[in-house]
Image (cartoon, rainbow, N blue to C red; front, side, top):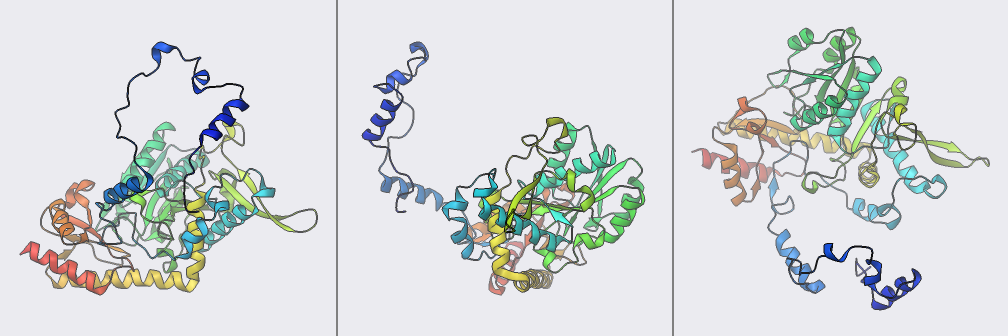
Length: 448
């Protein structure tokens, strides 16, 4: 369609007024007292033609530094990944693009099947028994998991590792406050959860331990040890995970996780200024009826034909408010579809190859930084991201890098004061050897 927005004509307006039995627009608003009606001119720019407006908006948009024209080394939860071109083609189809919640399964089979496939692929990646039909984002999915654990265990304390994304920890705390749940932070040691402190803090009052895998610093947590310490006290293990990393890492479900959550953004979803994205929530069968959101199931009709339906719906719009486990009102179906299309296009081999490229290129960047004299702060296995000591304020460095065509790393001083002058550098499969070398050279010049 050439025009995205079709203007309403005078004839359209007259027909609508006639349909409701009035002659003028003024009659439509006659119930609003004259004295409260606005009489002046709105303080907005004069209207422009479509072509003039399109040009002005394009000029404003061109001021943004985006990953299409800049080499982006910024991650911290939102990444510049390869997006198969078929993704936009599929999600732009009107039957998906305009779809809302599939209340009528008989006319929503396409959307329901797409969601079912999303659930299936998330289960394969996470090693869990079942997954819901998506959530707002990774942070809210983690918070919902914490609340679920508290409700299931009837305990009022959850432990959250300091290596979990800082913004996700804030969301967890906000959600928990409404349920009068205490949130206790487990400190990090050498970039991973301090297991000695975890062993001290976890007790019979703990509902769950929340960790991230890979964690915020890109380090790989020891989930087996976390699971052993947690389950010994009867608490649940909740893992926030990067789904792309699970293409090569052992799935959390095989390492003792009771709930695995995360954000599907690495698969086919653009950065989009931080959202909207698509959270996922996967768990074991024993927690199936406490999962927030909805589950899509496969069934057969009375003629034996395969069909898809909403099987479990745990939000208050579908069941009694006092029985509801969540008020999630959007399943982010369009973004879940984008992730499903991306995963399907890549296939199992492609997902694994994409994950390996992230590991290999990050390892190359780590070596390049160290050879240039920079300190890569945390050792051990890592995925996608490394912490580099720039020995000067990251904000100032990033401003200079931007002028050279680079989007720099995340300034860790914003959330970890002890890591002032340290940047979280993300290296995805999109970054080339030349871009990595050029970044290191620019930082060398700034450091000299």
